[in-house]
Length: 358
Image 1 (cartoon, helix red, strand yellow):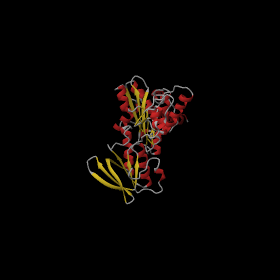
Image 2 (cartoon, helix red, strand yellow; image 1 turned 30 degrees about the vertical axis):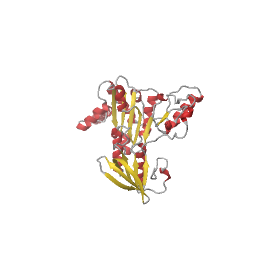
Image 3 (cartoon, helix red, strand yellow; image 1 turned 90 degrees about the horizontal axis):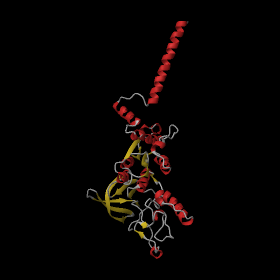
Image 4 (cartoon, helix red, strand yellow; image 1 turned 90 degrees about the vertical axis):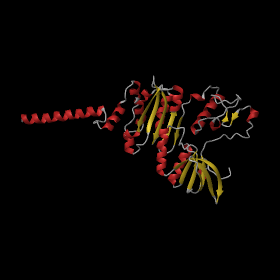
């Protein structure tokens, strides 16, 4: 509080581009705005205590985003902030690196993106019988507080602090409080997207959560973007779609997509999970060719092999390509080539006998 700082709300009030920007926090907001400012032309350094980028996301997905951001000039530093002070209209930050080195560095602007805390001081919630903690107002699965006549919604009570969940939970509260419905927050299938380039999109459980809940009773299938024709054509070959299902059924437990347009593609998986449709049903979707939605369709199709305890076709194809033993892109193409060769032979034979007849 002793130095001026920006948040994700006030950063847009800037009237001049900062030459050097310090970002505290390597979560979604820090990465989104950090990448935006380095593209504007600022020198950007993002600080995090453990040096982990987007710690809640799939590590492979986060690594792809980090690599791209570093390529563009963003510097990630594992360090703790010791102090900040104003020095000649700039911000002097003293930080201690993970290796123990103490560094002093001047920045033009400071962006705080290390999380949100509820602004509930002075509301006198105790008088209303509403319980709360440092993390926010305490609610049950119906978003009802400890006072049954009072409900809460949005960031002040939700773990998922997203704009779309604030709106969705507000509808739930309206239905429960004013319409006498008994809707539950736990029934929601909640997607999220980090709007870096490439994007990271996720819905459902993460792999650590799946392991904690189901042990090893799940399957994972991952399809890289680099073998999808639309991604190849548009030049967005970096990324993948990773999906998880139960071992005994094709129930989708979670899905992570990283790459260009990941947030748009996630809608297919979210819809399937809301409708309680399995991966094998998603695999039946006919996607117009060529579109990026094929990333999701063919990732889901991979479970045809998993559930039958056999390698999916596309994995065999990739292995063959790596070993240099492949000739055809797929069985359909192989049949087409055989058919074409057969027609060519038939045509040549016809011409030969036609000449003989003449």
